[in-house]
Amino acid sequence: ANCASSDFDFFYFVQQWPGAYCDTKQQRCCYPKTGRPAADFGIHGLWPNYNDGTYPSNCDPHSVFDRTQISEVLSSMQKHWPSLSCPSSNGLRFWSHEWEKHGTCSESELDQKEYFEAAIKLKEKANLLKLLNNAGIEANDEFYSLESIRNAIEEGIGFTPGIECNKDSAGNPQLYQIYLCVHTSASEFIKCPILPKGKCASNIQFPKF
Ligand code: 5GP
Ligand code: 5GP
Ligand code: 5GP
Image 1 (cartoon, rainbow, N blue to C red):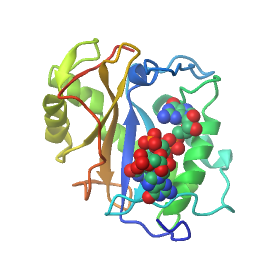
Image 2 (cartoon, rainbow, N blue to C red):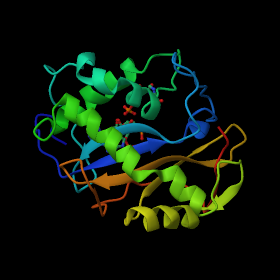
Image 3 (cartoon, rainbow, N blue to C red):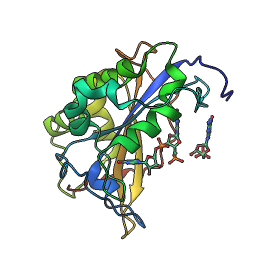
Image 4 (cartoon, rainbow, N blue to C red):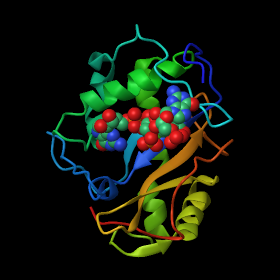
């Protein structure tokens, strides 16, 4: 992908399950300084992408993350976009990374404030945990078929999601990230032009958090 290009075809809106992030082999997690996040999916990122699966990154070195742009939505950011990496942080490092790597590639559509606000709105609109729970799929360490997870989300959103798994220290495949595709305006879900290549078994664990 050409990093100088500011054009793109669609977004991946990627959410992570904290129970899987914290349970992954050779990785520990640290709760944010603001406290243990809710047992809900959290935003990983809103990533400009091309239809062929490649993507631009770090498109504007002059556009640095500016925390004042998110001051009005700070509590929503902490709730919906917590950072679980170590050492414990207040999220700013994660958000700054996401803005500089991905957000700068959609500046033709959204400025910094609009970018973060759009991601929060998409998170609230999708409500993945509710869709799964309504289908009887709960974060209780049980195994569910990949198909049942995919179907529950497809019924709620209208489009097939991409699903990415990880393995815990015992080697169990787990539900880790869910990818939804979003129009370049960042306001509505669309059918994925290309699904990310997920490495999931046909039955996967939905770990507790
Ligand atoms: P990983 O190697 O863990 O799959 O991905 C590392 C990072 O590369 C992700 O956090 C994200 O920043 C970027 N990335 C991975 N896959 C994609 C993709 O399909 N589209 C975009 N836009 N970024 C991706
Ligand atoms: P993978 O082999 O998993 O597709 O990619 C490995 C890493 O290469 C990703 O984590 C990402 O950092 C980088 N990468 C793969 N495809 C692209 C692309 O189209 N654009 C950019 N900027 N990085 C990519
Ligand atoms: P990516 O390049 O994969 O979009 O972003 C991953 C980067 O964000 C890594 O440097 C990772 O350490 C950092 N990061 C901070 N908090 C989190 C988190 O809660 N989840 C993930 N996946 N990455 C995080």
